[in-house]
Length: 122
Image 1 (cartoon, one colour):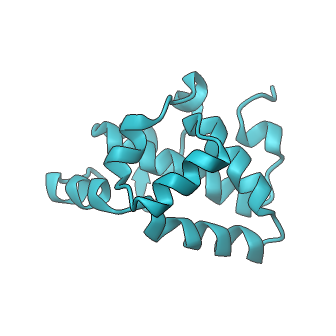
Image 2 (spheres, rainbow, N blue to C red):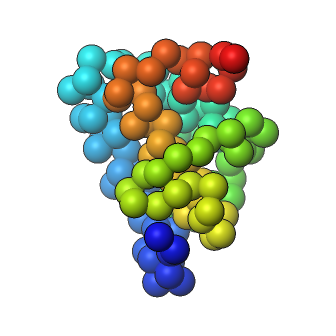
Image 3 (tube, helix red, strand yellow):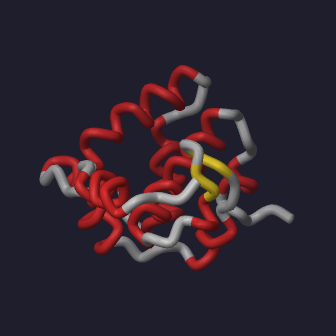
């Protein structure tokens, strides 16, 4: 499925603050911790807990969030389908980066080992 410019704009304008509580709820229900969630977000973006809290307080859009991020060089290893979209085929960089984050949260919730989620295992 290919994203449309309207879809990409909607994703870019979503705030991290509006989605973050859904990430927390999803992983907690599956027996994972907020600390693990923060580890995943830090791995992808380079943001520490304090910076994440600032971006939540500022109601930063995903566009701002990912423009400020120092994306992990291994992020391109995140592949697969999330929300009906094949991540590696998403052309818009912000939409692709948001789907990277969605995929990592999904893998965490599904009980994958942290080394696999962070692309450090074989």
